[in-house]
Length: 169
Image (cartoon, rainbow, N blue to C red; front, top):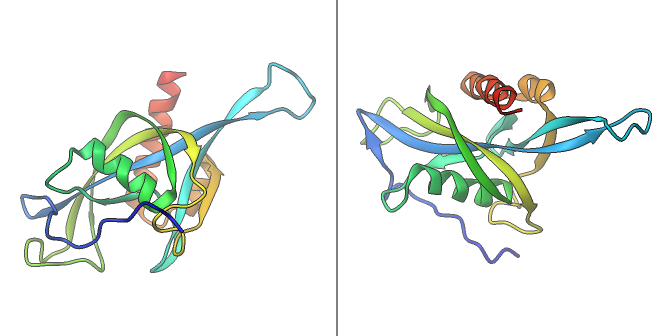
């Protein structure tokens, strides 16, 4: 059982211009790839995706950005709650607008959301985390992740992440 507890509810959610504000991240790591034992082998980038309890396809950890935290703090919290990972939150990747099919409320009747997405270099995978009973982690290469994205906006974020990573390397 996890000692951490996931935040729930909408009382502390942030809204701006009719959009619910969301924060999330693209967790990643490097894996050595070497077919022939060469010590100078290339590093393969893997990203961590999680299943959705509400349907097919995979997602990056994300969730409501609350009044008592920054977008960065919310992204880190969501990575722990939904994916059970900790690490270094690096650069801002971008803002992505989308329409939630399931979560409309009085502050956002059309279900419009704006997600601030960050790169998270994973340093620790937790053995237990708040949403482990409903979430499964999957490490994928970037091409595999593109094919697995449940939402088009997450695919766009992944492409922007890939460009960001190329600039860093």
